[in-house]
Image (spheres, one colour):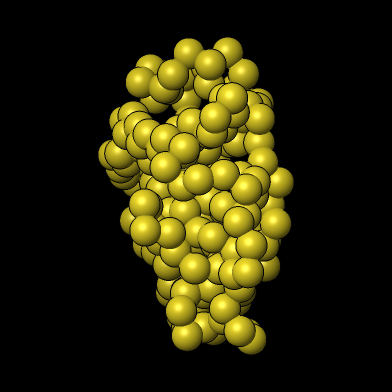
Length: 187
């Protein structure tokens, strides 16, 4: 294909939003390893239960604009304490599988409040990729990598970090990635 029409096709595909390298929702057979409450509410948000509010964003040390607002607790690095108070925060992991174009598989968080603390279940799927190759031309990738977002901090209140139980689940998730026989890569 001559150079000018190839770039015109690339520009048309990019502006049309044709960069679909993964499915947004898993098929039913891909969800066989998910917990029953997730299957019962397929449209439910990734956070469920008594969801504490997002109160701030966490920046890694040295990248925070201004003085540090949170310090990592000694109990667990996912728990942070607000400077100058007893407020405990939980650092949500936004993504289970990152790619240069962004988050491919999101992490899920389930919160349960008890009389003396919190129980937090973090679901980080083990991702298995299945490649689907179609004949023709398509856009592969997204050009420049996206910078990471600051981590959300959810307020757990003024409680002892030892009163928080964090459980990690790793169900299997199959992600189908589409490509083609003649991929074009954006600049």
